[in-house]
Image 1 (cartoon, rainbow, N blue to C red):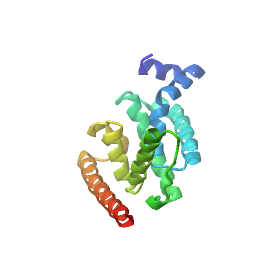
Image 2: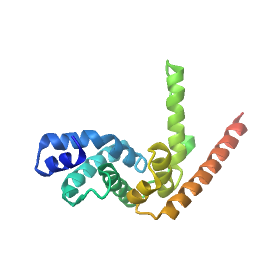
Image 3: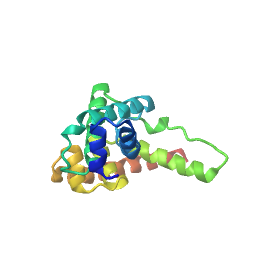
Length: 181
């Protein structure tokens, strides 16, 4: 089913179309929200709120962009607003607990992913968002501009600054680890 048919069926009140919309875009919404809100319970509740808003506001979607971009925009803005209200605190890398499991390769890979996400969590929300949209989600500059509402120059600037900040964080973390040896 293409986007136009899906939107039309959701607007007509079809429960199966709403379930299809959620299943089709759930991963995107979870990813967008999780980049800003790290608490699992808050993130899960916020994802539900995003889909409520998406269904509620779907009549205002006029196919000026892809449906996924429009939904990502809603998820991003709701997550940022939530974070501002909660004044979310950045996580200290020293608090990261690494698992020890039977399958060392899987555990190391999971640990590395968690470590990288914790590094990203130290960036300001706007930097973290544009960096993850560009590198992890593969969004283009125009798509990031649409999701965030930032001009292209700002998006490019934030990606550049985020890379520099991330490099500095990695260097500081490496110095800490060398000092422990």
